[in-house]
Length: 194
Image (cartoon, rainbow, N blue to C red):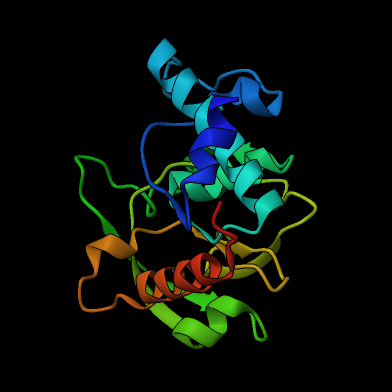
């Protein structure tokens, strides 16, 4: 199948930000603030959910960014808060007008993320959704002060890490990208070439 052929050519996978995941993918009705699902977005959802599940199955290193964290959670059976202002009573995580906000995230000791970025980090956010029910294979590896899940990972030997923030907005801190590239290089070295 097409997903398997794509995975055959990958040594690593980065799932990036973008429009809201269609709530039908996690068994919910659309909230009025959730992006209206259109065919192109449904196709992207389907591809990314299948690629995430396949990458995990194969041990392909995976880094999720913003929507990518949400896709990972949905791919493994979790759900999302469709509109954080309804849950939190504020819009700090997404002010609007494509302006990123700065938040402090606190990592969970002993996680891969904590080993990469330390106890806390200032991050750039732009999201009105976040993980609600955590998928069974994932653990929380960082939260913001208001309790929003800001990062998740699979606590196995494989590199599967997803952050709700946008590390690409901080060019002075590329640790997550260095880590996923190193993991992809290790994966590529261990792959049997046919």
